[in-house]
Figure (cartoon, rainbow, N blue to C red):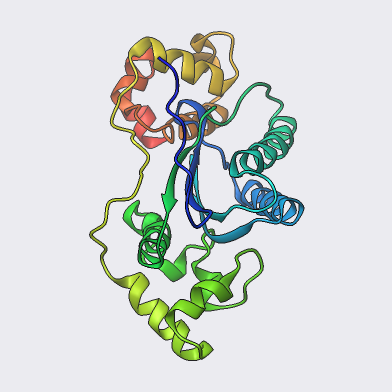
Length: 253
């Protein structure tokens, strides 16, 4: 079945979700996140596009973009190619890191623009990664409430108020409210089969066989298990069944 053509935004603004292939973790540490921020900054300038919001999660990225000289797809491709080349070199891996086709939705009015920005900023809180919006360092929320380096904050702040202090106050209040609109989301409801999970774990670990996990020293094995447990859709029970390692050992890792 042919792919459905993407809708074009009347405003040129899009909500983009770029996710790891097979739900893979794409940010292992803060160095990785900083590299992604640099990639976004570099190609924002080269493609002359606008960035109104972002949030880096463990296995996916939310972006709120204004199309520039290049189509949005070209911007995403350039950012992805640059980051993946760096990531693969760092972790001595090869192959794809992101899904081939990113998810997108059009933003055609100011109200939905603000709704999506709030949704993006609230992602870490809803995922249990932060107690409140200000405590998560890898979203654009801090750029709206402090110094802006990557996002084009003036456009959004101008919607709230002409005076900076009032705009920040109104923005904080709005971002803390619970929204009712449904934005595009990452669907992790589909659980992988044992065979799919086995191949995913084996590829992620970089081992020829999963039996290698059984003969690793305890510290290295636990480090590997910690990474495996971050793979969305795979339970400790499934990991235990596939690897032969007890659930209690996996849970303690």
